[in-house]
Image (cartoon, rainbow, N blue to C red; front, side, top):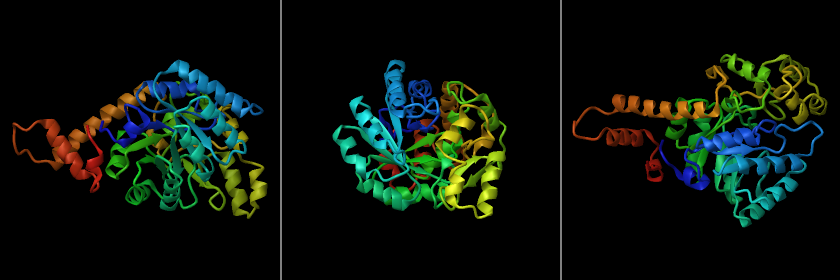
Length: 353
């Protein structure tokens, strides 16, 4: 696969990041992703009991992943968590190299993280947010389209509209997220100017994920219209269609106030669906491309498919876009020329094989 600034920034062989799924991003999952050549990410609530201590839980995962892999890994910290500051302190104390923040303004913590030598990525869903993140000194942004699972951003910009606009607006690397589950999505994201991708839902339906089998199977059985966005007026969230989401949508249509709806949703009910397997008791986060996920496989198999599919697509594009002009010309040089021709202007100066 093409090498970009993201590879150098993260120290990963592939510019592929595993989404920091709050209840699911355990050391076992992240370690498998890092060992496969991507960037595994652990989260503070992963596998935790409802009344557990997130700081103790995150400490456990950081220590454990260091035993599982010698390759780079990251830590996901949603800034809307009331104990986000304590989690930031914890990552610094444990010498974590990469932190990915979301759901808030990174300015409060970016100085401390950068002073500790930590590479900082921040999740954004608009050009405005991306520019603010740059002003805060982040090293890269994860631009997340409305196709993504979980919280999608109030502006609901689709990935094809979001990525090129963010790429044009910021000087730092842009990582695409939202609805990417296979090699076709990776190639499309790179063609739009992204220098890496983040996959979430695809890494739910893997053997190393602790998610309940009910949740995994629901993803593999989902069709193209089996996800829905609820909370559009408060906090847009994409989930699998279930009795739970129908209840929330009915409350929204009835004009129920936000405070009352919040009694039904949140991090704890999200655990009920993901880890306990009761899909009608909480939000079962799921990206819009779940219909492309048909099986539960090992993490390594996901990477094999991404890498092999990427190479196959490039060959197909080279045959379609490049006429045969010189039999002595090396096939790789033809593919490189065609690939660069498909990339946005100026992108090829940042990419090398």
